Amino acid sequence: MSAAVAGMDRLAALLDPVDLDDFFARYRDREHVVIHRGEPKRFADLVDLAGVESFIFETNPRASDLQVLHEGPVDRSEYVYPSGLVDALALSHLYGDGHSIVLPHAHLHLAPLGYLIRGLEDELGCRAQANLYLSPPGAAAFAPHYDTHDVLVLQAHGEKEWTLFEGPAPVPSTRRFDPDVDGCGRAVETFTLAAGDVCYVPRGLMHRAAATTGASLHVTVGLHWVTTLDVLTAQLERAGGQRHDLQRSLPPGWWRDPAARAAARSAVVEGLGALADDDLLEDALDALRTDLVRSRQPLVPGQLDQLRRLDLIDQRTLVAPRDPMVYDLREGDDQVVLSCFGSEIAFPRSTLPALTRLLAAGPDGVAVGDLPGELDGDERLVLVRRLVREGTLEARW
Image (tube, rainbow, N blue to C red; front, side, top):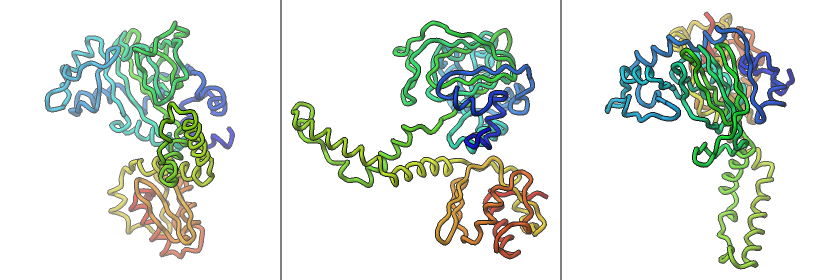
C-alpha cells in the first residue's frame, strides 16, 4: 500500500480484496466495481435485520427518521400520524404490499454504523453518511436514477439485483437527478449482491436495485469527496471578502456594447487571477478541513465513568485516543491548539511532544509516565486529565 493511502483501514476492509491503490487509480470517479465474497456474516456486527426492525417498530421513530419508497417516495400521510410519529402498523402494511423502508442517515441511530462513518471521515477527510434500505421480495426503492455522490453498497441480508444503464455520466455533483431530463438508456450490466458483498457506484452512474426472492437489507455509504470545485468555491468566497474590487459592477451595457463587454471580460480575467494566490489557496484548504473537524460530534461511550474516576489517573495509567476521532493539531509560536468535537483547546507549546504521542498512541495506549517531553509528573497528569475530560482520551482501567 502506498503512503498516499496508508492508514485507511476501514476503507480497505470494505473494499478487500481490491487494493486501495487500484481503487483510487482505476475506479474512483471512473467505473463501478463489484466484490463477491461468499461471506454472508461479513456485516453481522455492523447491522442486522432484527436490530433494524427493532428500531423501526419499537422506538417510536418520527417522520424524519425514515421514509417509505416504491420506485420513488410515498406520501408521508400514509404512514405518519399528524403528531409526526410513525404509524408502525401502517408501515408494516406498506411493507407487506411491496414498499421499501429507508432509514436516511442511519449512522445517527445505529451505533456500529456511526463508528464506521466517523472512522471513514477520519481516514478520508471528507463527509460520509449511511442510508439503510429494507425491501420486501421484488421491491425497488427507486426507479432508475443516479446519485450526486459516490456510494459503497454493503449487502447485509438477503440479495439484491442491480442493473446499470447508459446515462448522462459524468454529471455535475451540484445537479440532482431529474427524471424529466435525465433519460435512462439501455441496460448494460446486471449483477446480484448477496449478503457480505460490496459494490462501488461512482457519482452519475445510472442504476436500479431490486430485492430478489426474499427480504433484502443493505447499507449505502455515501462518500462526499472534497473536489477541486469545492476548493475553488471556498477560494472565491474568501477572495470576495478580501478583494473589494471583485464587488465592482460590470460596465453598463456589457451585454450589447463590444467595448463594455471587453472591459467586463478584462475585469473577470483579473478577478480569476486572484484565485491563483498561494495564501488564498491555503486558506481555502484550511477552511474546508476546519469545517469538517468542527462539525463532527463526539462518540464517547463510558464518558461518565471516565469523569467519575478522573482523580484515579496516575503515572501508571494507560490512556488512548478515542477512536474514531476527527481532529487537527496546530502549532503556534507559543502554543498548540487541538481542534476536536467542535471545540478548540489551547495548550502551552511545551506540551507538544506529549500531545503528539498521546494522539498517535492507537488502541494500545501509552502510560502517562512514559510521555515524552519536558513536562514533570504533575504536568503530565494535568494534561491527560484535561484531555479525558474533553473526551479526546480515555483511561484504560
